[in-house]
Length: 567
Image (tube, rainbow, N blue to C red; front, top):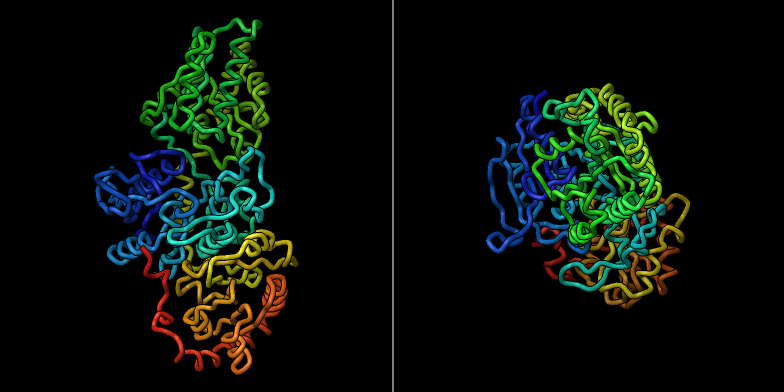
């Protein structure tokens, strides 16, 4: 069944190309070749000629591409952008889009997912990293340690500062992104590792499909024999030049090898890519011992990179974060090169240890140097491992992946979540939070427990879909904004309010309002209300009654949603 598809990616070739952008581009081309009508919405870096918010159109490699200059990639702003949603809605309507396939969308905004679903499109999201529950996207703490507690985001960033306000607890951002992602019909995880990570983070496992991205075998020439046996053993690292990719670890391993007197065979390491550690690599090249073995080629066209891969004996990936399905390891398989990777994440699904390559501990430069040394001292090892990859490379054919994606597009209905009541939506409002609110929300999972984990959403992000799913409005201070209370009551959403004369009057005469005097009292009331759906429904009925009395007292702003008029 042919479909009209919108592919959404925060970046798209030829600009800022990484693994996720390559996958989005390759899949768009493949779907087009199969008769689907594919349009692309992509973010772009702003320039002096095209500042943030600039919307443009072009054709790239035959694909119609709309580009929107991003306003920010910072965690404060990259997850919610109403203007991007409006641009996308215009494309959905103009091109009569049936399926929206999202890739990495931080920068454009997670809010695009529920907006596309509200439009009536089928929504599919390919997960390329941990952005659905990790603001750093890597699961790495600032100190480089791996995070295994998905509710402790405040350890990385206590608060965000969205435009026009002061600090909000980071939990609200995490919960809103998760809420948006939960509206996708299907989540495609290229690795079993990432599928498990998202399930552990609270996403419905029945909606997560493991489908490899695959690799474009038709454009990669496979070397069927041993590389140049008379030249140096060639290693290739193609990666973003950042700490999470293990660039400092690789440089340390190179220094260790260069200083090892037992190594007499020639060898060289080529690093390809761009990133903020470029200057560190350039500084390493100034060392005479290292410069004899290190080549740095920067970012090069993929065709040129594949030429290097065909001549490479061993592809190296020194990442310290749990990768999903790294493209460079797929490229090594496709080209018949041996592999060295860290023993973490999806790497374990691409490297058959001892058969296709070697695995080492993340962050261990000594272990990495020892693995590289094995290939230097035994020229036949890379040939054997490369031959193993050549023998299995057809298993990773991109065409098979596209077959499965087409089956996902054709699915008529998404599966029902096993327990939709376990993550009720709580809209948070009124004034900016006190320090106690930030501290308590950061430990909400410890206070509520019993499998009940509400999603806290700031009022400015709450559109009609959020309000339809809301179980409660929680007012943080005693200065209640009457329009916001009335908005909740008219929608049958109970209000948890700090005691004040106005709220006390509503609670006493009409109902639908639960009062608290301390924040611990608020948590206790929230726990009771959310854990008992029948009780919540009773308060919802009284909320509608209370709205009749409150309507006459509020301004017209109570009848519109700020989230739908944002910039």
